[in-house]
Length: 155
Ligand SMILES: [Zn+2]
Image 1: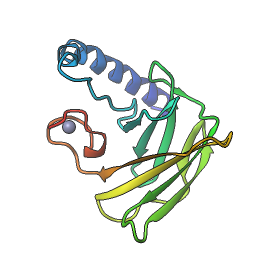
Image 2: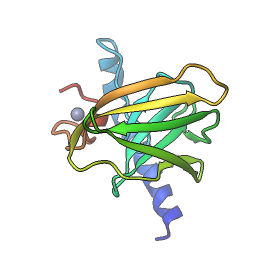
Image 3: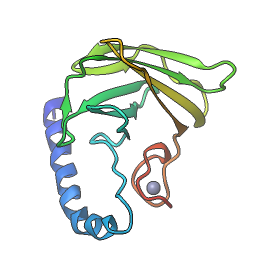
Image 4: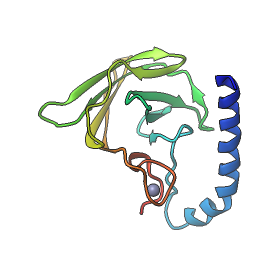
């Protein structure tokens, strides 16, 4: 299969899973707002508009995708993003370049599977920079299908 076919197959599977989980999510929604993962299985950053998906790729790069209201990827315009990862006294700084409508870090994350990250999202227009800080835990969650940093089950 070529990459396009695989992508389209994956999208179909994602849609199917979303439909299957739909009624369950609706039940939980009354108790607490349901946490969502991004369409690629990453962590949603909702502090900015459009919201962003923060995803760690297999080669330990960070990929940032802007999402529209339907969670569909859209070109990211109007922001520059940088990431500081690891030990706060000596963090690894990641800069991003645009690739195929997404931002992809030019460097890779530091070694280890559990460290703090700070994502700086700076409006190009000169507005206030938004900082999104969280623990980047790359272990697989035991209760949902996501990695801990993107976990949606509040276990
Ligand atoms: Zn989970």
